[in-house]
Length: 198
Image 1 (cartoon, rainbow, N blue to C red):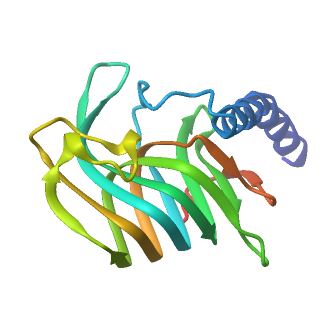
Image 2 (image 1 turned 180 degrees about the vertical axis):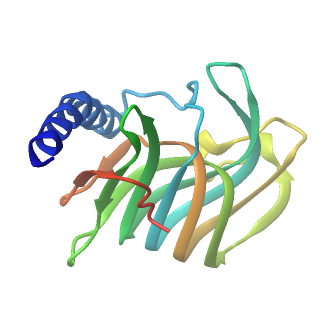
């Protein structure tokens, strides 16, 4: 039985080495502003947790993302022009021939901070404690100027603030983009089973 276990783990490593490499490439491309704000999303959302986010420039509007099978999903597009984040965790469940595994990315721990420019997240469900400065609610989403990439369709509901502080952030999200994403302590793990951030 022990030998079979070793063989399974080798197969597991063969399957997920490319996943880890692709994740590194995507993080790098996002950090360099190569990836655009619009793309086809995977068929599953992911979890995003932050202990604290402090930002300059905040905006929200409504949008729709789509999957490869052309499933349309309504989201709240949330943007922060410049953010400093601590206690960051992102997790995604992946179905494999070996069962479900969880890909986990972490950063901003042990005194480190994550810095992000032009962060935009397409959120399905979110929960946080929030403090906002100079809040404007029900502003035409097409006129939002705090975070231009978070503008919505003209004539629809939007909101923005000059500054935001979020604590204990829990998001079920479909997509995230950023012009720059700096993680001095990026951690990456693939875990068997379901081990989401929250």
